[in-house]
View 1 (spheres, one colour):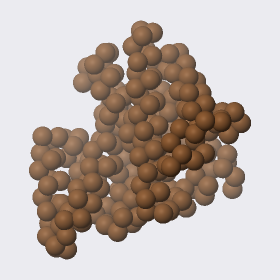
View 2 (cartoon, helix red, strand yellow):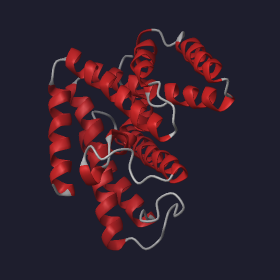
View 3 (cartoon, helix red, strand yellow):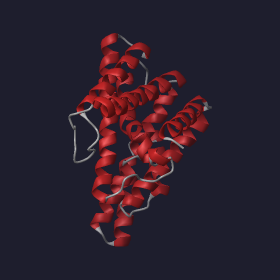
View 4 (cartoon, one colour):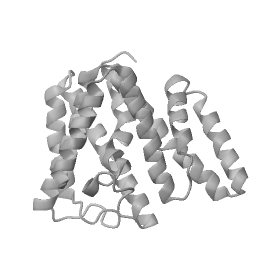
Length: 241
């Protein structure tokens, strides 16, 4: 299938999950936490993916205890291999993506509408950054990480994504604009964060689950990083959290 066909199918699937009852959405986020941990763990030779949903649950229900849980699991894995490197790899995998994704559940608690707005804004940013960069991009942004991504693509994506948030967020103009800038920029950082790991371990994608789109990590990198930022800002300015 073409890149566009995969993109449409992924988009439809995500929308259906968001529209589904909360327990199904909750379970989907737990699965996403597991599979991203699995993909990234495979690339750095540490598999603690079964614990990733557990950490997501802990962060959602008892965030005060999550650092202790992460420390204990990391210690056990570091001790079993007697390796400080494995200790820190485990620590990293329990932090990313598990803690970040727990905030996606909190966003969904504020309703289907606000969750769809959050996701659509990230998609618009990603789509226009890709096509504007492809056709008009001339200035590399971080060429060592992503040689094909450009300043023009980045700015085009941020502008179009911000316009969407300005139109559909139920907030004042300046609050919506700040949410857009911080959320979309965080999504871009998530993209580069993922790409940085891929370049260092020498892989093109974390998996080929979605063809040219790569794996779950490649497709949901922006969502992982942007979720806590978006949640924090809507709580600060509008919603009761």
